[in-house]
Image (cartoon, rainbow, N blue to C red; front, side, top):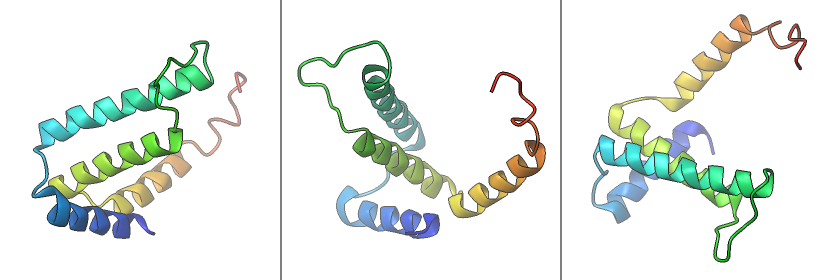
Length: 106
């Protein structure tokens, strides 16, 4: 599935199951909540915290939740994520071509 197809699929899902998009501020809050769930899993799996009884432990599911809400925000604000990611990769490729290779900390 391309990013464009993903944006179309999320839009169809919203039209069929979601009645309408939540407003942008609500979706921003939901995105923040989902990113927090990713952070919780990362801190417990790779960091020093331990899992609690009942903690969600599916990183892939939580990352997909982040992507879904991100796509919702892109759709409702008219952002073509496919195009923007391509432009972003091009910009980063030019800007950072040697940057990381020349970083003595890496």
